[in-house]
Amino acid sequence: MYKKILVATDGSKHSKKAGEHAIEISNLTGGDILVLNVIETSYLQTLPGDDLIEKLEEAMKKEGQKAVDDFTKQLEINKCDGACTTINLKTALKLGNPADVILKTIEKENIDLVVMGNSGKHGLDRFLLGSVAEKVLRSAPCPVLVVK
Image (cartoon, rainbow, N blue to C red; front, side, top):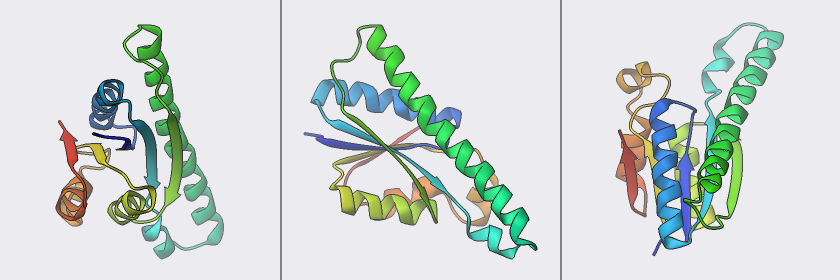
């Protein structure tokens, strides 16, 4: 049923729980997993100084890569416990508006299921911009599992 599962992760505790669900679903369905971290950089353009922008962007890329790497480790731990069969895993680190990038990735990669946490690392975004999970849930052409 679910041949391609997208896990949107930011390294938060909610996205880690979402990853656990995605692993279980993949194990049951034999679906491939695409782990995606989106780095929001649009607000950096308002900062003074190109050096500062470059340093902050680099730090955010490292944090994003860590979130993706943590998921890969989480998958390996589950494999070691014998809970998972062979799961094909692909990772991606992209720049842009998280909800928009997730939605574009769904289309481009022909995703059958999105699994994501209900709240990310930056809870203030919910009040300022609206929840990424909420935007994806409303606009995705496929089922979205939002994990608490």
